[in-house]
Image (cartoon, rainbow, N blue to C red; front, side, top):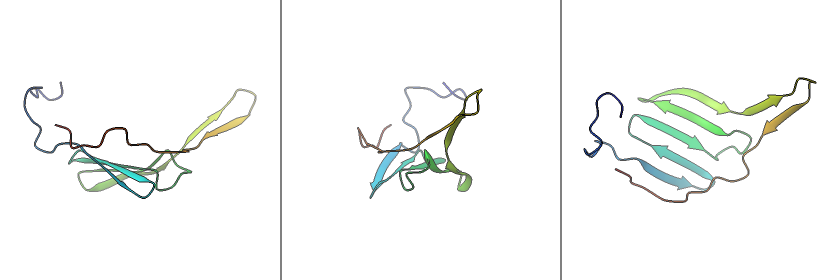
Length: 85
């Protein structure tokens, strides 16, 4: 429970999941997460309260011997389409 919220109350902005082409957007009202528009990024963008706070989030791992691995997004799949309350 965050900020004293009552888990029984319906949130003012239900979570919505929409797909446009390969891209999937998750929208909570105050937070928007875009994935799948650019398959070279794990997350394309994060917007909080209308302000874009992050772009092109990638996953990269470098081992202790210097070998580098990069996570790529093969597919974004919507398993259950909102809105969620």
